[in-house]
Length: 309
Image (cartoon, rainbow, N blue to C red; front, side, top):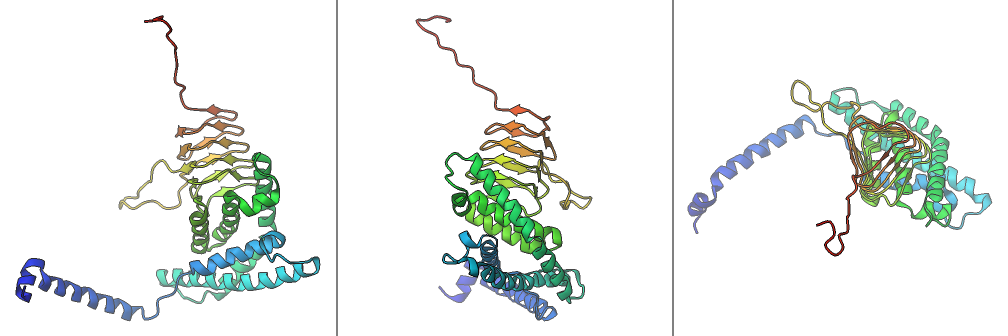
């Protein structure tokens, strides 16, 4: 087949012209942005969250042969390295945002401030994670020790990521926070947006397929099972047809609520304190405290020897 025949069959000449135009357009964009800012590194943030776990729990997630004399040195040395790396990742995010908004890219002091404030929250994060571990140990008869919960349970892995990510999100590093959240999502199948507000003693049992949206608010001592969704019922749009960002659109779950496997709870509704939501329930309206919501039960009748027919 000759080139002219190929052009007639596949439209090569038109493709060459289109590819040239795209190539020239790309060159023009690169000339306008010779050195576009880099994004935070998923690989580096994975190492950071792993080392933060070691800082918070050095005897279980840190070095296996640490003694009492060496723990403080290990924690201090590791924390110094982690915070330096984290500061660099936050700087990359802030530079990227500044470039997107056409602002000055000198964000070093802002990054230092965020990193320092994050470091100050580490004791609070540790207390919250301890409460999550205890809730999992007390809530699962298969758990033999709190240590087993810490090193084995995907719900605790997701909780550690979320407790760290949520602080960064509220301090002004939402992209770094989102990457950390997605690392947990990839590792555990549990998808918690870093904007979600979750109080102490939160227990995710099994966990696979759990989804918790950005504006969800979860009270104390809440327990959820696998495949639970706390999602949005609808997505509002502005006058230009664009999605409205940041509006409250996810459920509020009050204290001491249990949500069983497969339940889907949508919209800015409130699940009252002490309620139980049964498996596979689809719920789009608020329920008062102490409610028990379940699927409709199937009625079964037995007819013997033709009776009832």
